[in-house]
Image 1 (cartoon, rainbow, N blue to C red):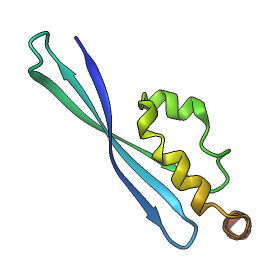
Image 2 (image 1 turned 30 degrees about the horizontal axis):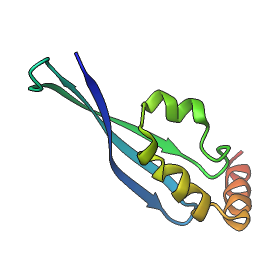
Image 3 (image 1 turned 60 degrees about the vertical axis):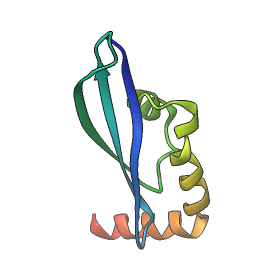
Length: 92
């Protein structure tokens, strides 16, 4: 049965630009009728290595859905990364 993963939503949360991603996994039968639609969610933080390709591959996104990488690259400035790291260290 054909399965397709579609990027549904990216939300960037202030102040540390933490990214919440929602994807839909759609399974169709041989006649292209949808038999299953499952939502999965993933969270990416500024200290992720500009989005670990293994995690993206696990989401099984197509090349055109690499918007996650584009958003991470544009939002996770050195200032944001430092601020996030400092905040996390303050919690320890």
